Amino acid sequence: MWHGDELDLDAYLARIGLGSPIGGDGEGARERELGPDLETLYAVHRAHTASIVFESLDVLFGRPVDLDVKALEDKLVHGRRGGYCYEQNSLLAAALERLGFEVTGRGARNRSRGDSLLAVTHAVLVVTVDGEPWLCDAGFGYQGPREPVPLARPGHEVRQGQWTFRVREEEDDILVLCALRAGAWRDLYAFSPQHYHPVDYVVLNHYSSSHPRSSFVGRTLVQLPGEAVRQTLVGSELTRLHPDGRTEREAVAAEDLIGLLDREFGLRLSDRDAAELVRIHRSRD
Image (cartoon, rainbow, N blue to C red; front, top):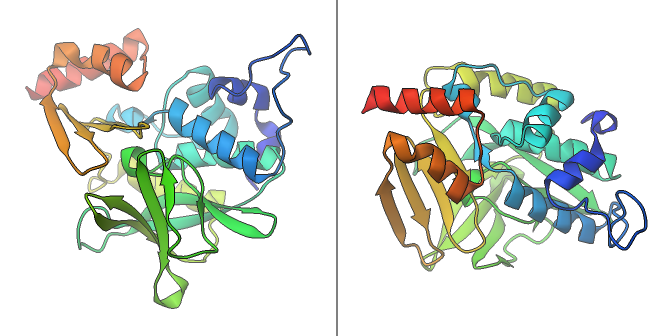
């Protein structure tokens, strides 16, 4: 379903830091064999979220966002760019499928912006290991999980570094991912059991990348779920979120933008993209 057979798996694993050869056993040898088991799922998910930054700069630049596996590989793997949920989770799904996992998609409704009812526009994955489903999501930006979250045990709290998550169940089999912040549980997003396919994400991606009411259109958005501090750049404001709920905000001048992306997010743009981003920000000062 996810065209994992088209993915250069070695290049992807090298991109996320799991592809280095060891001990003279030959190119691509690793400390352990990667297979469809829970240890591999944790390792790949954690490495992906730590290595591939969340960003939607192509939407800002007015470029089409292609979800074809080879296009994702060219951009996120070889081009060392980031992407937003449809790109991130489509690439992760292809890699996990190639490793032998059973992967299905879900459509989620964002609840992190208050009580407003928002459309289903977020893409997440459910991966089944030994009969147990796990929520996998590399595409919710700085608020999202860095590791898989169990779905078979609603209410079970999972600690990921200094951050804690759980999934709770509502009526009609709706599951809600929640994060603990400043002693209170906050809903991040909700999703139903309905399976989504890659073609469904193509439709959602079209809205998110082109509709004038999309939250991605017309603004800079770069995010990283750090181990301790989580960071988001929205427009020209950098926000750092701490596990205790504290937030720090900092205005970023156009001339400092490219250096900040490299230093804080590990994102290095081409000369062309860097110049375009600076031009856009200066035009709005």
